[in-house]
Image 1 (cartoon, rainbow, N blue to C red):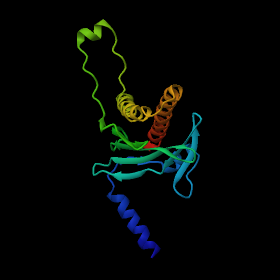
Image 2: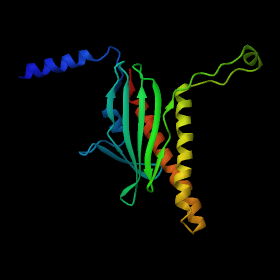
Image 3: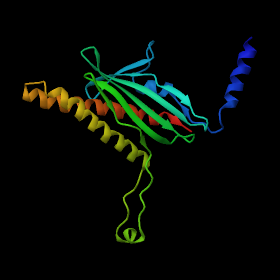
Image 4: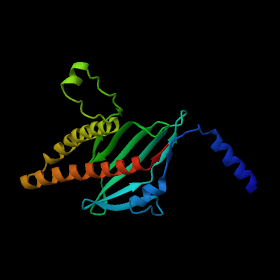
Length: 198
């Protein structure tokens, strides 16, 4: 029976395209204070508490991978905001697209799917005038995602703070909340990228 299982596992591995991207779940968990029995990690980052659920992975026919990870911002013992990172990688481990969806204070947020940008075209005249700024497509993609995320947060929290009468509370809670959630998501995204291997 054991031999049958081994044979089945080997057969499944052989069906994966050669050069398929891999993901180190153990490494990600270790960087987030470890996975618990509920497959979640609890940790603090920048004096704010978060909870990350083990990502789910889906293989693409070309050997790439779609990864979905839930990140919760914890306040007073419960999730104050729930966000889902959706990331698509090529078979070489290159981030091809990203999206953030979530719910905050009962309001839905969605950055839309942001695809990896092409390098800008630079004319010969522009090149001779001054050296072009270094272009890093992954960094540009991530920046676009968080510009869209900040816009969505402004909408969601903008409506929420209209109901608050305390001006000082409105200013500080709004800015801190948005910054905390954005920082937590960036932290997770950076760690996920470090756990992807070709």
